[in-house]
Image 1 (cartoon, rainbow, N blue to C red):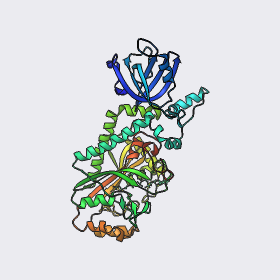
Image 2 (cartoon, rainbow, N blue to C red):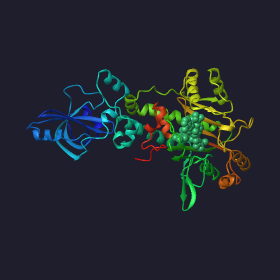
Image 3 (cartoon, rainbow, N blue to C red):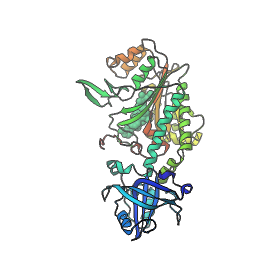
Image 4 (cartoon, rainbow, N blue to C red):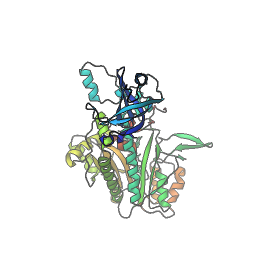
Length: 463
Ligand code: ATP
Ligand code: AMO
């Protein structure tokens, strides 16, 4: 049986359960409780020595000697509890008939799971009561990730991540996008800039792909009208921030544009509104579980996503007293502040900022027809932090080569890419999403390491 399925409708039934022994509480020589856990669910198992049930005092003693987190099989009968149970466990108990230890955990684990699952409010309450509890730091959690991942909030986070990825695919497939896979071992940088991991490819200098950018565009040149990819993205930046990883999961899309690059924004609007609705409606247990440890306000979003011109964003910041270089980029602080201003004015935590200055966008970005100092580009924000970059792309080889040169890129290193646009290439655009950022910001978590199962940051290569 699955612990999550146990409720009063199965009271009286015999069940066989395998789980981790989360807590073991001896009550007397004749009685003990063992709390078993499977993923986000726990159930209380009751051992009472009785000849009728075939339970001996030795069996009770045997069970109380299990180490926490050992894997245990229990055979027993589902029963209604005599006293009210904690709201976070199943609301039935198991009267144990037989209990077996399948694999023991070491007696003292490097992380106490109960401490790892506590909210900050719990710690503060305990401290006020004079109790000393140990906060489990992020590094300790990551060093012992196989234990840390067992906390209910971690179980919920990675289930939500899976749902976001799945919805991304499902939505784009329904809009006739084709899933593709592009190489991760490539010959040079795809975004411009030097932030690539270098390696030798059979003796030739090569690097890990910084994005699928050049290849997803070449797939469009290859006659696929709409493509998407879910895959790893590698950035060698030495960015020790709460939102940068050296390896993350990129959700990328690229599509032909018929009239205007807002067609790409419309896809993002439909895609993300459907992702947010899906999470809110179908991941209630997961969201409640995260909220219990890391309380957060639900994301505010509109049925039709707000699109704000970059210049208007700059103006809003200016009026609020933040001076921005009009043709420069927004720094992290300005982005955060704009997020707050937009929320006050438009009542949304999710919006698209479009028409960025040319100077702050990658070389392949299409300049605006009416004013080439600006571009047909956009970033998308959740709670004032970027989750998506996207744009219309340059589809003529001459302009592409010119822009690459202006951006300091040696065109000989990307000649196959540039040539692709001389064989007949349709107008197109696309976007790239960071999966870990979407989950982090949807749940208002404070660190991207919480939404990457085994994060790779500038310091961490193990586990
Ligand atoms: P992109 O996806 O465009 O790289 P990003 O969120 O990684 O987006 P960047 O464009 O690299 O952001 O930088 C945007 C802002 O993030 C910068 O203006 C800077 O303020 C901040 N930033 C980037 N790297 C760091 C860093 N290592 N330390 C602190 N802030 C940083
Ligand atoms: P960009 O470099 O903005 O755009 O990346 C797209 C999205 O990826 C996420 N992201 C990151 N997540 C974690 N750690 C990082 N170091 C990191 N860097 C970026 C962000 C960001 O919005 N080729 C373009 C996309 C396109 O135009 O299609 C690109 O790579 O969520």
